[in-house]
Length: 216
Image (cartoon, rainbow, N blue to C red; front, side, top):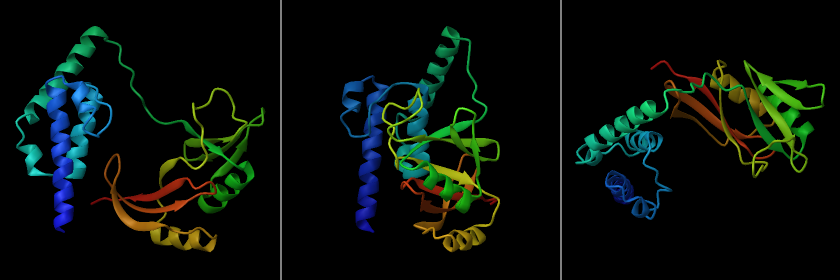
């Protein structure tokens, strides 16, 4: 317990140091504290604030002298950005994502059997897995369609899929088709609220989180 508290305090101090560096424009120092490349931008500041609220949750941050400066700086940058560039792109939803896989047939078998996705083959031979209003396009490793990611790699994805099927029923089904549950059910924080999730892996080792949205 004491070690956990010590680790949390250490993380908090690092993040506060990072915020200090951003606030005084010492970006070169901020990059050395081990939290990643620092960029004084609204997105960066949003990320820091979200991390602290959802992960660290310590009064030390809330009492920190630069807390209000963080908000002011973020709002200042947003206002300045809009003044320089009044055009803003708003993203509505995700249409599809791409998985690079070692075996197209094995991937299709897994997702159609375990998660009841629908296989779609386009006229040019591309294979996709459809669910809801989205799809997963499949690229074969070493023979990817152009354009593709800079470093496509099977087994490197981490996806969260929402389902209305109760998790206790989903667990029984997954076990019946030979899928091992690696973690869960556990509570997680999703985009619009809390989730109850289980985790398992597909044919390439990609981590799949299957979640129910919670109302509480």
